[in-house]
Image (cartoon, rainbow, N blue to C red; front, top):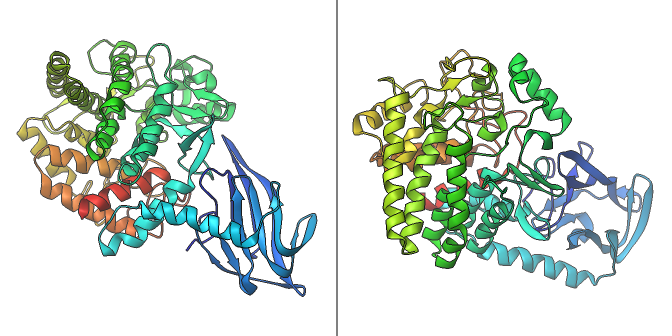
Length: 519
């Protein structure tokens, strides 16, 4: 059942959303890229003899009112009311309902048929939902609903967006996380998310940050002016080093090959691997050729948006940063390219990728391991970069590679399980005991499922399955008991942070993936 104040009633492929206000009246709005939803109808009520009929239940396939009246999708742009002897009223309009009344879109429909078709669509989707254990089933069903509810058409293709209420586009690393969850019940849709991303690659091999209705966001000149102004405030005078007014590539962290291999493990498809291999190779090479301005062999983020960590304190020092997560992703991507090359019979290339993975991790340890932790470098726009004072779990992400020397991996596991990062609801995006910790501010303290998921994944590869299992269980419990699939959680309360988006795509996908792994 949906709470229309928290989660909209919508349908796969539709941009229409139905939400409820505090007075119970419904609003129908249309999702738009980088803009507030457009109001289609507001103040919608159903009256019987001038008495408002309350909503009795909001289900995936219909909204039920008292008196047997239902609001249902007859098509992506078409909402209808079914019932008899009632009247629909809304701001600026009214209509009698006798059988089936079209509210948005066009067409006439048989009420029994439109209800049956809507129920059949959702029954077919839920029949694909993977099995999970009993205590996680209700939240997993919500997650599976979210993955379908957040699908829209972009350029005539089915794209799973992070949230129809706030992120109406196919975001780069979100698409990869979505694919990891979708692989368990709809691997074809999982592959389509990656295909859309790769099909919009730039001539230099780079993948864009966002694929949206009007094209792509791939450099700073594509950003809305409001984003330039916000970033200027966030990074202060350092913005003059290239964010505002300059042309800087904007992308997202390189987890694409990792996601491709996850999908292949669940539903092997050699043809898909052959299709994506060369684009993935070019994407990998772009980072070391074009995003390593100091030439030390370790890539940097050249823009806050490229990190996916838009408001992290690491960006308080300037528009460039090199947290340890980026090169960890690149090292693992070398290994996943080797896996793909092996399936394709390109054994010599597979051996070369393995050697590059080994060498990249060795370089990380040599240049960034200080004997206690991996250093995050910040600044660098107008002088040499410096080690960040703020502690984030990005320091732990080299575990993701599965290739660290055991003494280094053990030190990171001990750090993860220390009071800095461990608690009832780990892992905060800034350490609990850091002066910059703020449990409500995006990337400044809240828990994010992608961080926890990737750390658990890396712990297993690094030979620490017990720590991985405990992190996964605490994460699953937080989401199960936290009221929904939010963008991020307050680690002190387990509730959604105030500004976090609801019904968030990657939270749904990664919760589902962890739940499947938990048995």
